[in-house]
Image (cartoon, rainbow, N blue to C red):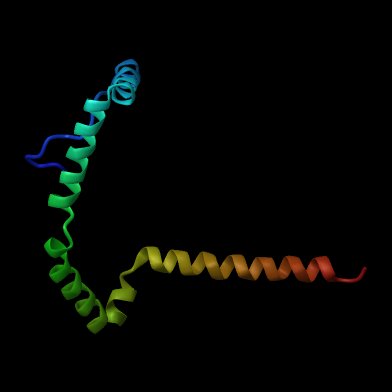
Length: 102
């Protein structure tokens, strides 16, 4: 994510050190401002729209052209669609049973 840019905080696997560094960031204004500045620089340099917009547009156009094939290979889309339809089916059954006169 940061490549050659300075990180905007601390990285540790120790919970105690994590807590101490969080407190240090919270209490030391200059350290906080520097970390904030580093974070803004990471966002500006790594996630600039112009770095990705051409590839994104090309991908959208490709998907649009091959939409049927794309949908055939879209496992998560199929899974979500299946569960949406199934939940609607069972909800309607529940409503029918609830409203059925005994």
